[in-house]
Image (cartoon, rainbow, N blue to C red; front, side, top):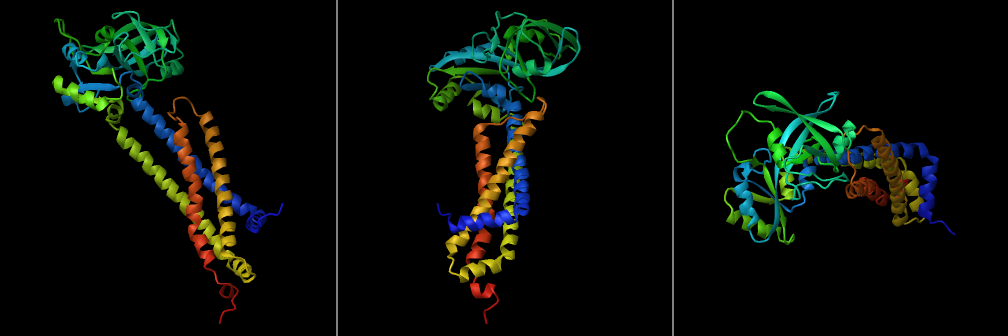
Length: 388
């Protein structure tokens, strides 16, 4: 089999100057490591903020109208929930209450901040446990813990979890039996635990003692639809029929979490600048390479070598150098991620990583476009110093 001349020239030069090309590949590898790591870190921090809302069973989330889609600020009552339930097209609704508390074990050996959610049994909003069982009663002293809590604390089904809650200015301790472990359910950068809604109302932090018969309030209502493809229309109908509420889909709900959008924009900007640096690095290297071999290219052209061969030779070198760097960088990222502690929120999503890697593979040809264009314009006589 005859090797194409452009492939022979490309491989011959890379072999003779392997150290130089390898050095550029390692620089590309570092850029790849940084880009993919930033993508994983952005996704991990995003999940720390949105995971609970993104995994809600229902398609729509109802907030108090004046709350600006802020879950902690929203306050709804049972009458509002009943009105939502009666709207045509609503299959089921579930109240969800939220508080931030500290938890510890029976021996008080450690303390951890978590998001405490009150959920209605068998309703949208209650997580399905991966291990154990569901909550058994509206006032049961039971809890389902998220997977992050189980991983970081070592707690398991049957253990006792103690909730530390400040009520009327005094710290109260509430012992709960762990009956289930759900998947990851983070919110506000905290792992989550789930208790029956009435138990939540009893143990959640309160600023004052209120012995009067008051109606319970919670933060949001999760709505499961009869027809899940009709989100926009049903959201408008609910808002028209029920006053003082704002209805949105899950994605809009978690994108409205304070800091979420700013956080994502920051990471996207960092990734963009890193890719730009990669283009400049690869482009600068091959531009220097081009200037050093103008005479050689002039000789090849004087012998009748067409521009397409010159272009393919340089393009092959750029592609191999860049691809090798991306492969090394991808493996380095996997090795680095495997050594990181679970407390670092880094999550690699297949589609996101694939997009990052494809983009990195394109930065080489983009960076080398100037070099390729320059080589095609080299005049043989001028390059060899024979022009008059």
